[in-house]
Length: 216
Image (cartoon, rainbow, N blue to C red; front, side, top):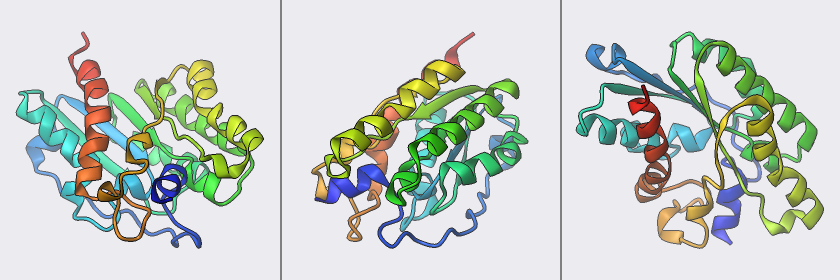
């Protein structure tokens, strides 16, 4: 079932080799936006298989800017990345001095059978780093498929609300769930969202970022 694979990872089996994040060329006036959002993620964030301007971070940026908000959204997605990889990169990402750090990681951990305890630990480290840098942190929850077994599914699904509560992140549960059983929203690889799929993901996250951007 296509959507089950999408919901648990973004690399496939075998998972794609990690690649260097594509450079984001942003006009100077956007780089100097008053409100900055940095999205730390894997190939979902990176917009695997699509032009970068069709990935959900770019869609969100255009939407908010069209509403007159002075905001930039920086895409820090790396295909094949895990929570451990994100923990290694987060300090570099935080050099962008974002007001909000969005974390979209963990799907590849599940796909590769990494211990739930490790995923929880590394996501916690990322959230802590963001909070320590003065950023609001938004954690995008991932739902495991039933095929991993009820015990493992329950343990994995519990990671995101637990990390959000313990470390003070804002949770967006089931971020990828809207792709389930919707083949038209998934590329022919059966793994990654189409442009329409990315627009759907943007619709999920945009209201959260709009609220944070407008917060006093």
